[in-house]
Length: 401
Image (cartoon, rainbow, N blue to C red):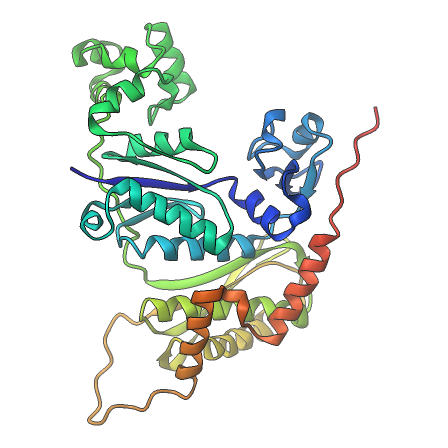
């Protein structure tokens, strides 16, 4: 019997903002762009009763919740928190299928013997996320991905729900047919015309009846899901050919001095991920997206494979100096292409680089206290400046009638 978890961070971006700025806790927060042209990136649970949801136009969101506090997104902060969350997942299973920065399926079938029941593993994961990141997460536990996803949705916020095999059909029966994967608005309307309002209605029909109305492929799919049958495996990321990090800036940046701390931080993040995966690479690539959305990449091949952040940064900085041409940038990214072939061994083992012990020490500190516990001066100064600006955010004035 499989044990599948679906772990989903609650209002992830908004929760990170409320964590980092205590004055926002318990208040209606919208993470989004320009009040008239942007869209809602995330909405805290306090603002959702007013009908504000992700991907909604900001203009509409502000009409529905004029008292909401709007903060600009900080994608680097969300990426860092996501990296820590997935590191916690990896403590329990290598079978992790990411769906986005803030949610994933985990197959813990083989982990039960070591860590206890699947529900206990979910509880431990959520507790560690809360303790180490001070962020809420919800989880669904089932024998199928489809059921686990619905269970985590119904457990929100900050809860978990287990659906045992014998409970599956009854658990699904009362839910609307729109919950079935692959059922969009048009299919939902057609199903309602056929008298299928709930998943339970679908489960009571036989496959032939469904096939006459929805076709052979859809009929089998709908019938199986209505009975909680979903044989798809949790599929981890395919073997990566590169490791990268990138950030979209809140505002376009101009000038080398403004860009360097961001490229430096990205190089260090890439290096940390390489070391954690015991990987190295020789090709360093820089990605630049300009204010006009033009995208370019530049790369350089190092003499030796590396997992050292300073080596990667120096290579990326040389590329930046040649490529940015003083133009305003909205995104930078650094990546390292992995070595596919093992290097030929020498007669005598090469001495470890002097930086290896320093990197090991920094990795241990970051693992225990977070990546911000120790960093470089230029990055710390840039983050302090960003934090000052972030704390100065004010509630949006109510529009005049």
